[in-house]
Amino acid sequence: MQRITVIPGDGIGPEVVEPALALVQALGLDVTLDVLDHVNADAYLRNGSALDAADLDRIRSSDATLLGAVGDPRLGDTGYVRSVLTTLRTELDLYANYRPARLWHDRLSPLRDRARRAIDCVIVRENTEGLYSGIGGSTRTASPEEVAVDLDVNTHRGVTRIIDFAFSVARRSVCLVDKANAVRHGGQLWQRCWREAVERHPHVATSHLYADAAALRLATDPTAFDVIVTNNSHGDILSDLTAALAGGLGMAASANLNATTRQGLFEPVHGSAPDIAGRQVANPFAAILSTALLVEHLGHRDAAEAVRRAVAAAVGARRVTPDLGGRLSTKEAGAAVLAEVC
Ligand code: IPM
Ligand code: MG
Image (cartoon, rainbow, N blue to C red; front, top):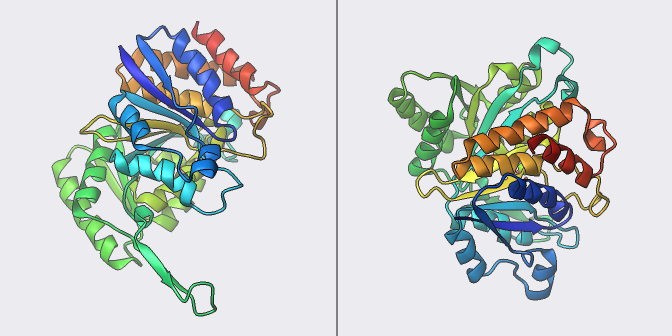
């Protein structure tokens, strides 16, 4: 039997996780759920930490983890989110952030040009290095002379493994996105690792774009892309852009993976959305599609496909939440998908 750890988290996290878990139960998979209800902002406010060593052990020893969302307006600085999300990504060495963007219905795209709406691409984001390294500091803090530095860490090992991961999930092509024309040292490292990787994968079509040009191209013709591989911060930004092109954050799923250890943390791309939390208006589809990635990772490919077909059918029938032009609540939209699966 496989064990899934669940961190509902904050804000809309618990609301969107609930229908996703109902779906897991309905799929009849041989899995148990281990819900870490206590990992949230309240715990952090009370104890100064939300995720302890015992939680990490439970997560590490499980087969996969589903996370709703972390973040709380009462916690202004980055400490809390880093202590959960960034810690999980780095502690479990989940170096590959896999963020697919697929347009489930033409109606959901903001693109004017119909011919450009066949969106089915993936952002493969390096997830443990770059500007998220946490290395840096500031001097003359809170004065007009303040200087703040965050180091952009790029290692040959880290860059090579994320580029190889991108090739391993490519269906048609891989596009490297960087800023090597302006960011010198890291840029050169990525370029070198890229050339080495391209030689190792001669049968996959490849291209290269600078990050600004990639944003422009994505907004005008996302059909040009299959897999985009890029660093942590470019991947963060571009995956919100691809989400917007494919129906918004309410539809955007993601997986944080380590291809060697097979550890995986699955989470919707959206955050805790405190402004709409507790009102049953959040779209559960990003959490449900993240759950599809999770069950696929656990080897249940047919179940994952069934969930995706069910989401497509629910969207097609406008059985959706208000962000997608529907009138259903979070629970009702989840039930609409469930009804399609069962
Ligand atoms: C994401 C989020 C996080 C990130 C934040 C909440 C730290 O935006 O998963 O894309 O930047 O990685
Ligand atoms: Mg983001």
